[in-house]
Structure formats: C-alpha cells, structure tokens
Image (cartoon, rainbow, N blue to C red; front, side, top):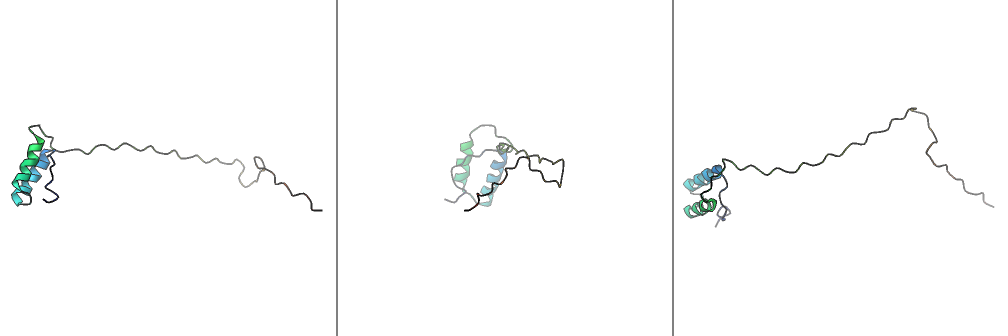
Length: 89
C-alpha cells in the first residue's frame, strides 16, 4: 500500500477528477479509487473544497511617543535626586 492508498473519502468533484486521472495513469489501483469514491457516498460534492478560514490575529497598538515641549533642556522634574554618602570619619 502506498501513501496515496489510505482510506480517505473524496471531498470534492475536483478531487474525484484527479483521482480518476491517477487511476487512468495506473498510479493507484481500481480498488483504491472505488474505496475512496464509495467513502464520499451519493452526496452532491462541491466543485472545490475551500480551506478553513484562520482566525485573524489582533494587531498590537503602537505606543505613541511623548514629545517634549522643550527639547534640549534637561529638567529635573520626575527624577529622584542622588543622595550623597555620609562623610567618612
């Protein structure tokens, strides 16, 4: 049994045509094709199987940079003052 000869039902008309083509080329056995075809049953198959839609990822918001009103001027607001060590004796 090759990798193509697993029991997998046909899910679309396009797959049925492809597997029929493989049968004509001799790449799969008639038994395998019949087993897959039987697996699909008498249901009306879609022309093509659409892949499932992936959930959309949430975009991260970019942080807005704060602009300083006085560029180039250092301010001490908001900064802790450095404490000097007590003098050594």
